[in-house]
Amino acid sequence: MVEEINNSSLLLPNVTVGFQIYDACTNELIALKSTMNILSGSNEPIPNYTCQSKSMVSAFIGHFLPSVTKAVASLTQVYRYPQINDYMENTHIRAPDGEVIFSYEKGDPHGRFDIVNWVVFEDGLLLKNLVGHFFSLTPEQLLINKSVVIWHPDFTQIPKSVCSEICPLGFRKMFQNERPHCCYDCIPCSAGEIANVTGMDNCIRCPEDEWPNPSRTQCIKRLVDFLSYEDHLGIVFTCLSALLCTITTEVLWLFVKHRCSPIVKANNRNLSYVLLVSIMLSFLCSLLFIGRPWGITCLLRQVMFGCIFSVVISSVLGKTLTVVLAFNASKPGSKLKKWLGSRLSISLVLFSSLGEFLICITWLITAPPFVEHDTKTTTAMIIIQCNEGSIVALCLAMTYIGALALLSFMVAFMARKLPDTFNEAQYITFSMLVFLSVWITFIPAYLSTKGKYMVAVEIFAILASTAGILGCIFIPKCYIIYFKPELNTKRHLMKIRARRNVRR
Image 1 (cartoon, one colour):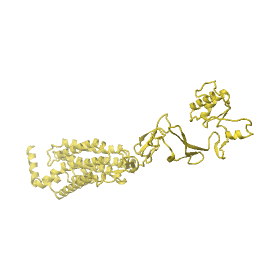
Image 2 (spheres, rainbow, N blue to C red):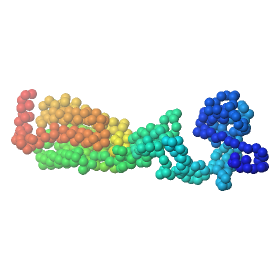
Image 3 (cartoon, rainbow, N blue to C red):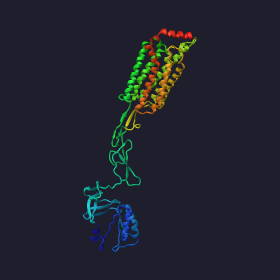
Image 4 (cartoon, helix red, strand yellow):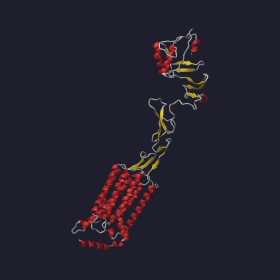
C-alpha cells in the first residue's frame, strides 16, 4: 500500500511516505509503550522529547481492536496526530495481486491472515516458515499444517495454549471465577448424569428408568426391586403361608368331624368355624403382598387384610364374651340365658367388624392405593411398590384392629379363672398377648425398612400374629381330641359339673 502511494503521481506528489510497524499483541499497555517509542524515537520512551533524526511522524494507523485503538488515540490526540482507525466503514486494503486483505465494515475486520512459524537458529538466522492461514470469510477459518511446524528441541510434545486439560468422559467443566473461559476445573457428573463426550460444559441427565454406569459415561437400565415369588424371601413366605393354611384346614376339618363332641360345642361351635375360616383367609391374604405390584393387588391387599383381621379379632372377642355370659347365666335367677346362642355371637362379630369395613370403603373412595415407581430412595434401582394413598386411612384401619385386640385381651384376662367347662379365656389371653406383641414390634421395623424388605416385615407380622391365635386357641383342643379322647366325653363333662356343685 505504501509503495502504491509513493509510485502514484496523483495521491501525494513529490512526497515519499515511510512506515514503522509495532505489534501491540491486542494489549493496551503494549500499544501505549509502542506509541511512545514512535513519538520519542527511542527504545526508552521519553515523554515530550524526540530523538528523531529523520522525517517526523505524520499519522498513526490504529489497531483492529477498538479498545487498543482508543488507548492509542488518547495519547496521539494530545500531540495532535491524526489517526486512521478501524471505525472507517467500507475501507479496503488490497495486496499487489489485487486480493482483498482487509475489509472494515463497522469496525469488524475481514480477510486472510498467514500463520507464520519463526525459527531462530543459534547463529541468529531467522527462518520464516508458513504453516497455515486464517480465513475470516469461510466456515473453516483456521487451517494449520502441524507436520511442517518446527518446534524447539526442548519440546518433547506439542505445547498447549490452554490453562486446563480437556475434561475426560464422565466429567464436566466448572469454570473458574474471574479467569478466561479456557480456564476451568474438571468435576465428576452429578448423580443421575453422564458425560459421553470429552470436554463437555454440562452433563446429560439420564431418563427416569435409567441410571449412569460407574464411570458415568452412559445410561443403563435400572434394576427393578420388589418381593417376587422367585426371591428367597418370597419362596419362604409362600411356602409358610401354604403350610399354615393347610394346618388351619386340617383343624377346621377336625372340628367339623367332632362337631358333636363336648369340647367343640362348649365354646360356641359356629363361632369357631367363623374364626378358623377367617384365619385361613388371613394366611392366604399374605400372598397378595408377594409378586409384582399391580393396580388391583394394591387396591385389595391392605383392605382385605384389614377386613379379614377385624373378623378374626371380632370372633375372638365373641368367644371371650361367650365365656363371660355362660358363667353369669349359670347363676340362679339369671336372665342372661336368653342371650346365649349363636345369633348373639354372630351379630357381635358383624357389629365389631362394621367399623373396619366403613374405614376401608371410605379409604377406597377418597384416596385409593396405587402402584408407585420409586426412583429416589435407592440409586441405580427402581422400587415398584404400592403407595397406600392415605397414611391417615392406613393408621385408622390399624388402630381399629389394635383397639379390638386390646379389648379382647382385657376381657379374656378378667375371665381367665372363671370356673367354666373347657374355659378357653386363658388361651385367648395368650393369643391376644402374642398378637399385640407382634404388631407393636412391627411398627418401628416397618418404618425403618424400604422396598421389598418393608413388604416382608408386614407379611411376617400377618403370619406370626395369625399363627399365634391359631396355636394358642386351637392347639390345646386338638391335643385333647387326638391324644386325650377320654376327656372329650359327656361322662367326663358331667363329673366336672358334679364336682363343681359339691364345692358350691
